[in-house]
Image (cartoon, rainbow, N blue to C red; front, side, top):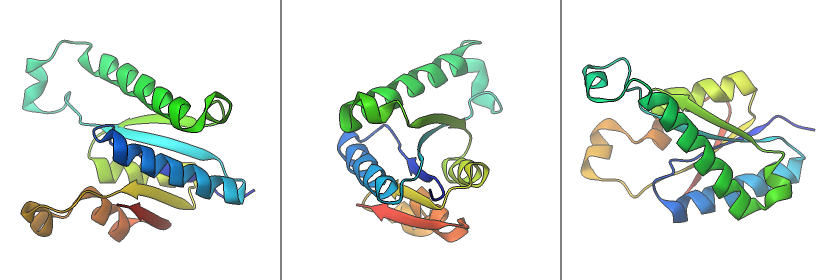
Length: 143
């Protein structure tokens, strides 16, 4: 068995998320690798905006994201395959957390979706571009 495949999903564009998940599952199955699925939430607790949210907002957001990951995986991959998937929810900056999860899991491949770039993306760089630049493992980008 080879190193795990990490599938990074935003949970904001269902069509793109389904394409990314389908391809990640296919690539993991080709190698008999573990499939990990991650979603990254912004960190509301360490910024000035934390005062605008309920005390347990973050815990509720993590629960919601975990359920949405499980539901999406179940719909796209089926119940049996979904039972073997590790569903992870991280908190922080998307590209940094994706890279941390990949390093911690020992991932051999990151599968991530890319949106069509806006003008601001050329100046700042989208998350997919940052993951590509800083990753220690291969990155497969889905459009």
